[in-house]
Image 1 (spheres, rainbow, N blue to C red):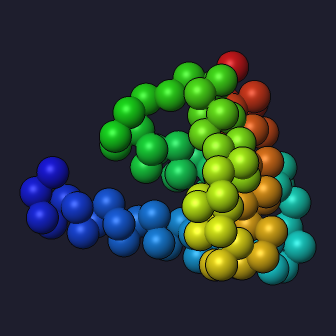
Image 2 (spheres, rainbow, N blue to C red):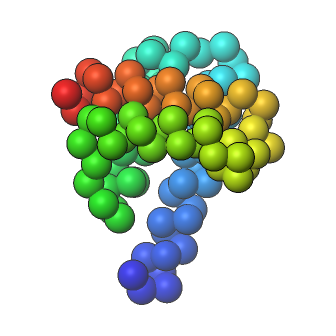
Length: 98
């Protein structure tokens, strides 16, 4: 990636984290159309590095919950965000990638 590509890559994930945190704060269900639209954007962001299938994408979500560093990073953005993101990713994987 060029430096500009790297900056865009990081800016997009920061926007996604903020948007997921806002949905969580507003009580939006992880399987709602709005949150699933964010999951589609997240999947597209992940695909800039590698292209996971449904199992791998859902597994990445579980990693966000199970790995203490990821869990802490997400929950420092918003308590409960790691689990919320993992749920949204699992739903997206089942609906869009299966």
